[in-house]
Image 1: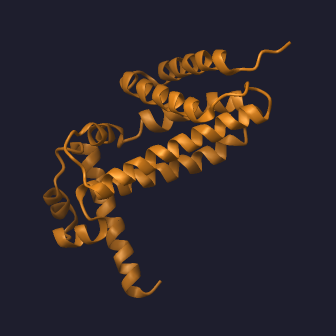
Image 2: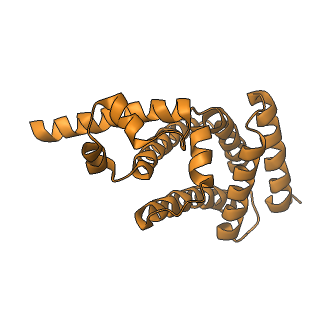
Image 3: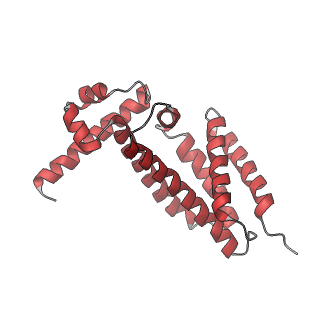
Length: 200
């Protein structure tokens, strides 16, 4: 990486860090590009050069969050010997790292914002959702391959699992972590009743 590229990456990181703090403190809607300009000392043009839009900047922060989450999951996953245990571990990580994440409130605002989004933003959101569904499919397929789950349509069940996760996330925002984990565990138990292969 040459000096110019290094400076560009440093600027991008500085803008992203300042914007993250603003989104956490003010929320998504209340944070303007002007706020980010003021917090960073960067010009509006410079911010748009790196991120194209406020939405693009927020998606960049969501990508960072996703990468951190996946890294944390990879470190935890090896602790679980069965897919059933992985599902419970997955639910626990969702509570500990998503419900309590500083950007959760801003992310709710972002995704529930009814204003029309640019095509590239919509495409990026679709990619995020698709990534979640692929993760769910892979996890469920492991259960089938190991003989823990009966043969099911993993694509459909991945959507059900994602809907369950999103719905619980909305319902449990103000619950204590222990209570939220208990409710997620109950939801996973209910899901498993329908897919666990009966033992003879």
